Each structure stands twice: as C-alpha cells, then as structure tokens.
Image 1 (tube, rainbow, N blue to C red):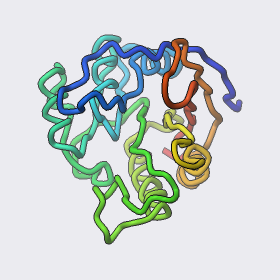
Image 2: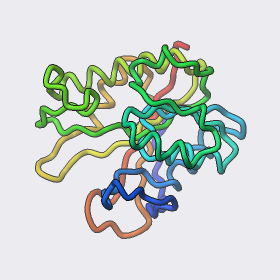
Image 3: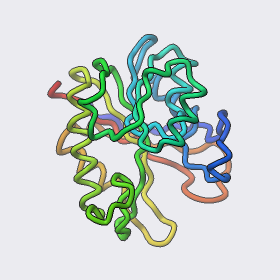
Length: 218
C-alpha cells in the first residue's frame, strides 16, 4: 500500500552542536528520527545511516534501543560523534559508496538526510568538490550508485527513508523530486511523509519531506 502521510514533529534540537560548526545547523531533529523509528522499526533492529553527519541517528537509536551503524566521510565530524556514542565500532569514516568494504550486518532500516546539492551548482558534495566530478547529474548518479549498494545490505522488504528539502534560497531547485526519480531506479518508491515543523522557522522551509523506499529485491 502506498504511503502518504502528514506529520507534525518538533524541530527543536536536543543534542549539542559542535563548536566547529560555528552555529551552522545542518541536522535533522532528533524528534523526526524518533518518529521514523516508531513508524518503521522495533526494539533491537539494526538501523543504517550512510551520511551520519553530526550523529543524530546514532544518538536517538542508542536512546531508543535500536542498534545504529553508519558511515561519515568527514574526519572531524566522525571523531566528534565517535567520542559521544557507545556503539563506537559501528561507526566508520569513509565513503558510503565503498559500503562493501565495511563489515556491517544485514540492516532492518535505513534513514538519512544526504548532502544537498542545488541543480545549478557544480561543486559536488559526494566527491568533496573534486572538479573531475562536477555537476548535478553526476551527484544524482552517485546517489543511485550508493543506494544500489546499500540495498545489498538491507533485508528484503526493508524500508529506506531519505529526508530532503526542495531548495529555495537563491532559486528553486527540486531536490526532493529529483532524488525520488533517481533513487526509484534502484529501489521501490512507496510514497512520502510530509512533516510540518511544530516550532516557528526563522529561515528555510516550514516543512520537510521524507521519501519512503522499499528494498523489494533483497
């Protein structure tokens, strides 16, 4: 059955922001992760985040009795998160496209907010700005490759949620729609959860979107 849901979730952040971020808030809130865990997992499930960032998935999973695993490419963020989690050996520093090289078990659920890229930018965050891989089309293709490899580590019929926003700062960039089209080539798109933020938003979107995929092939 297709998933089409509307939630209201707190956008307050319960975990500290590291000093090196200089106040730049890039995280999804813990309340959203918690709500998604309630919707798609049970206690003891293995949860994978391919873009760990500042560790929200790890922090919430450890609080909620799920077993987190993840990859973070940025060494500074990786070290900061690792110092603050119990499941230290479940976090690796590396490229999610190289998932097969890491000794991870089969996963029950996958949740992340990937690095965003507007369609008019050349700088590709998945390659850390390497000029040989400039461009939005290459970004979307790399996301396809990463999720194709993630699916090989997911249980059959496991859900994978990608939280993203359409970008509106300079001009409109339909990131959510483009990710939906690109990733549906390697996973089954089951639908979306639109999440309204319960607190006032000074800048940025008043809501976010969670694309819900299923690993139908196993």
